Length: 205
Image (cartoon, rainbow, N blue to C red; front, side, top):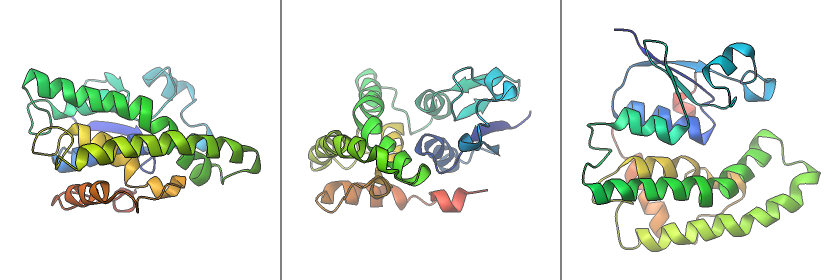
């Protein structure tokens, strides 16, 4: 049987979350770096894998491709401890992943992209300021929940945690301080202590 291939940029949180889960589950794969700033996600070959022109893309050994990071997490985590089978807990995983995509990523991840990838241009400063409010609102929600729970769903790390860990642990790169959020910081530490955890730098090709 062939290996999975993952097309992505390890410093993208959406790509990192896939790499992190594959490491935690010891899933063998080939990582294919895609430089989005050079337009490598807009080539004819890449668009044949994902017409939306976004990373990550998981290519199965039979050539089929799966896109959207959280969909990939669900596929990889099936029948593992990272995806609960209880219907309510499963729905809670989805709940947090929708929260990540709609209430967290548009503010924290986008701010980080503007700063880290684009170099924080002057004409984007007003946008950064407007995104601060939404980003801190998302962190407030997480802090409140994690003040009562060790993980986002149940008593163990799930793909809900991995989804939100990806951009939260580098929130400072988007201009967000985690100093006022002790429960989030403790949660980040719990995840980082997994024996197969790796950082973006450690995973870099």
